[in-house]
Length: 184
Image (cartoon, rainbow, N blue to C red; front, side, top):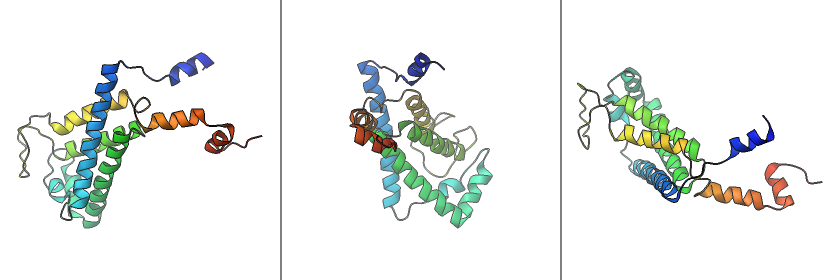
């Protein structure tokens, strides 16, 4: 790869004001949703994913039901779910590790969708907020996270921009400390 190609591959996407505003708004709304859901689960001493997993239907239902029936596995799933939502939400809200957070969110939402897909003939006793056929809010939020994954904004509006600015404007001593190089 020549120098010009390397430079072009590192170039950040440019967005118009409306595009940037819409993408940042979507990133922050999804971040808030994840953060709030995680905090709500952590602060509720009675919350568990057991009932949700126990009602699983579809291709992977045996696996999800087995997780619900194993107390150790269920405790691990609950903890990963709670703290995963909090960390994904925080990263999206403050604009750091955006692509990693978006990808983790996609994986988490895909697991939710696969555990309780809204397919014809599948009915759940856990109340839903609406009537769905194949497409539900989980799938829509998953698709929105794919947009965030493909069109990142934290380099323009977020902590990542501040960290990049600091790294770029650091003096030689600070720069060498950040990279681990020895100043000569």
